Amino acid sequence: MGKASTALDDRQVEFLLAQKVFFVATAPAGPGGYVNCSPKGLDSLRVLSPTRVAWLDFVGSGVETIAHLRENGRLCLMVCAFEGPPKILRLHGTGRVVEPADDGFAALRAHFEPLPDAALRAILELDVARVADACGYGVPLMDYVGERAQMGAWGEKKGAAGIEQYQRDKNGRSLDGLPGLRWVEPG
Image (cartoon, rainbow, N blue to C red):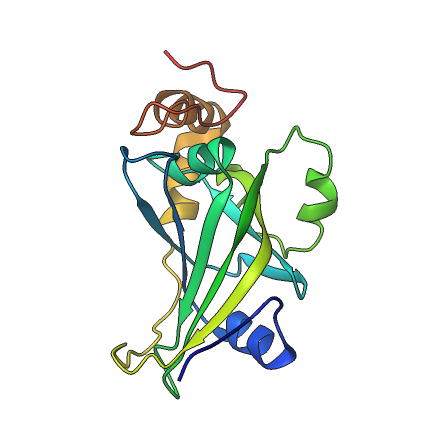
């Protein structure tokens, strides 16, 4: 059934990159606050080494993942096979937020194909400490239909100034009141 290791092997990398959706989970430190699980898609995930992955983080109505990573760094990334043989892969480790003004952003950005930069707010990295395979027998079979076009249309309609204001309004603090994007002055 399940097995664990400290690094991704070639078979796991191939499986990880073949999935159309992945999920990231974080939580604030201590007993209170909200656990967060966010779905991610597009061609936004890259394996940088057997112990390091990164993905593009697009503007959203919340900033939980970023805020939790800034507070404590704990992160789990999970992919499930919705097509083909059943399988679940979880990557546990420490996450890091790299915003566009940060050193190293351009070098990380170079790993990704062009996607809608207008809505790109950060690149998130995971230093992998544990890789766990599981059976995935309970995950349903589903057909991939295609990517949604709404994010690009939303970004074009808002424009750069509108996206910046949206982030000021929505991405300065998490639901728990933790600081989100560094450049945003929470109101």
